[in-house]
Length: 591
Image (cartoon, rainbow, N blue to C red; front, side, top):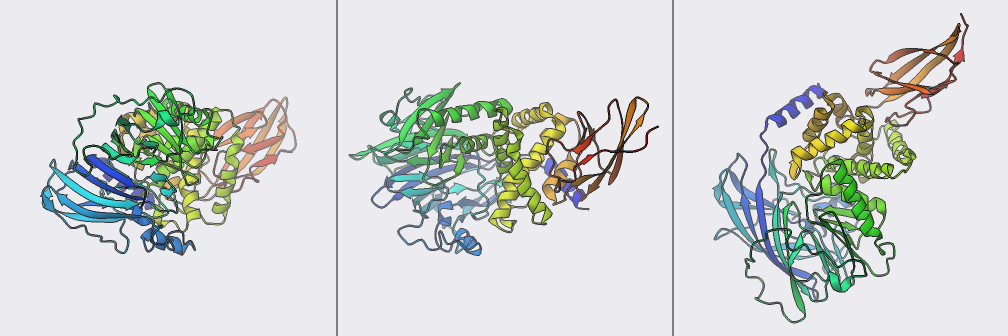
């Protein structure tokens, strides 16, 4: 019944005509380092391409998650963490709308999830029918938290990730307005961003987009290597259209940098007067790296090369990187977070950089809803990262720790379905395992089943169909089915939507001699509700078994006496008990 319901759900989604709203932001912002407050104004032009008439618009104010009593802080309390609940008034983040109007009409922001204020609604003065456009003007002030989490400030270093009132996505399911929580990330509308930043003159800036006007500070911060390639002419950017927040010219000791980007679903930026710059290029893509003084792991082009190599690898797998530049920033916080044209990394680790560059495709180019289907980018990205290292010659044993960790959870009955929304996982550990680790192993199984050539074709199909669009599981399934020429519901339904387990074992392995031949008989048993084709290896020869039945008897005729039978010799399957996957042959009477 569950599988039938899934089939109906996906059929309904397939029949829903795809649409994508059009958005265009113009933003002016000025950073006061004395108070660490950013004062800003935005104009949002919003076109309703949906078949529905809209009565309201929703915005994310995600910096309000990093303060006491937010939904994020309250959720962390359930896990025994108090990172943001105990932050004082000078340390917590905020994002406060001070004025908002639609057209010429002032409107009142509504915080329907209070006390959480990470989502705000505004009622439109007039309904917005299909095909119509409206303009929203927003004034706001914002401040980052001293406790970093995908954002943060330390001294004069500011990592502005979620910092502007970000229009929520309206798709075939309606408004995506979940509050920001520790488990799960983002979902954004693709559009154009024209952002002018007013900062201290000595600040070095990295951002989404290209600096079409002003000096980001890279030349003065350059450690060596080529001159920064600004790519000011990458876009046909319109003439500046001031919003009235900033004066005609920057004040003494300050500067302005105007950034422009198209076909992106987020705009992030960072500023730090101590950044050191290194740059490079790969094809027509400019590469910018900004790192902290004294961190020798980043210098001498190391991070530049890691970034370039990752872009080359994923461009070959999917299709070309579509934007004019990539900026790799050494942020305050450990770990990493991805944004279109920009990654914020806590170290120069090749694995971290590669993972975040993978997200330029799986989340940047393919814009999934990370809190609804986080595995589509995090699990996929983890798989792609390991694939990158496989291509470099790292042995397959690098998968072993992930396999064993998931096998332990499966044996203990601790798994939850990968397809759960992020907030539904019981705790952060389970969320991480089911969103990052297990899906990466599922993608590996799929690649092994289809073969690498077919798997690669599927990635090309996915890119050709869905680049720079919102994507769902159904879109990915369809790409794989097109490339494979077969229905793959059996695969996705059991591995993504259930906690079905798999345990193959060799019940017996017997051999007898018949003249000059040996007849080998292997009985294979399957426990659990899941199944996968499994490779049976007898000494040097191998064959793939369908293995849907609980019992299967395999008979082989061999020229030499067999010694050992092994199931899944390459350790690909999520088989929860692998110590019963091999057996020595018992020799029985000869004929």
